[in-house]
Amino acid sequence: MEATLPGHRTMNPCPVWEQKSGRVYLFFICVRGHVTERQQIMTGRNAARLCFICSQDAGYSWSEVRDLTEEIIGPEVKHWATFAVGPGHGIQLQSGRLVIPAYAYYIPYWFFCFRIPYKVRPHSLMIYSDDLGATWQRGRLIKPIVTVECEVAEVSRRAGQPVLYCSARTPNRRRAEALSTDHGECFQRPALSQQLCEPPHGCQGSVVSFRPLEIPHVCQDPTGKDFPTIQQNPLLGRSLRLELEAGTRSESWLLYSHPTNKKRRVDLGIYLNQTPLEAACWSRPWILHCGPCGYSDLAALEKEGLFGCLFECGTKRECEQIAFRLFTDREILSHVNGDCSSSGQN
Figure 1: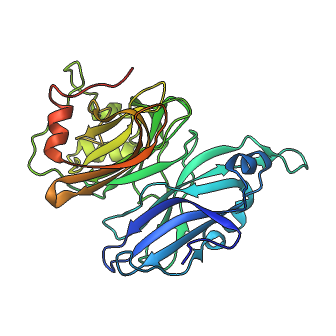
Figure 2: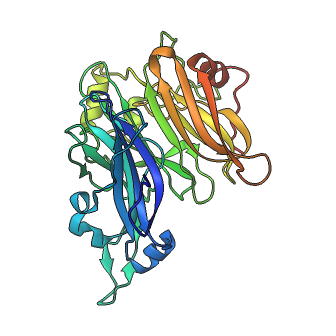
Figure 3: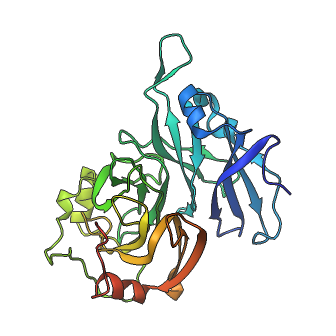
């Protein structure tokens, strides 16, 4: 079966696995005809539909396409020049909520009485389901920073509710980071990372959380100095900061993949954050691929201490192929904390 609507083309795949039922939901957008994203942004006329298909047999067969545009966006679509999900993966939270990362080009208002969008800005948001995929809703736009493609990871704490971490693409030469304490419905004001760079115009990146397997804690910057304290983290709201000070520290680590060069999309790096709710605690990157690279997506098998990265790469000036690499948590630590690590910040 062709997974698209008549007269539309399919883009931006974003799967999520529902663990209780074993279902896989594959989200994507269907774009009418040959309308480009730029055309939609310039005219303010959305040509995208939010769709998904579902598999109950590990991808052997799939359901018919279901269009969720009216259910999730509804009349608000008149303020969305266009939108997309992913690309990458969604996640299921400890609460059972399914979360799909997305972004929308928001039109705050129209220029006079003409149908000309004014000050269109992209903002990330989450699409979620609390009933195992039967119905879906959308969260609030992450403002005010301009953010586009994003991924999220749930950070577990020793006490209290877990926190949802969002990493989003920006055109500002720095990655945007934001935290949510209500399972992704809304996020605190995002901040631009001082450690994670973006090439010009930005690039999609991937993030996953995992619980380490009896690995000693190490958290120092390249100079050997201690990282800033919790109180200095601009991402944390006052209530969350007080909880952390009271001892509700993170049990989860974060892994992040993205091009490491500030000038162009080259040298795909793997970054490790062992204290994701503290300020500026990303490791130097382990360069997984030297040369041209682009979009990537991470997966974690916590019990096995195994990770996978699917990524665009090449050997010349362009990305000629899509590659897949498996590696272990021990490999990650040996590279980011040992002599093999490389900053990649040219």
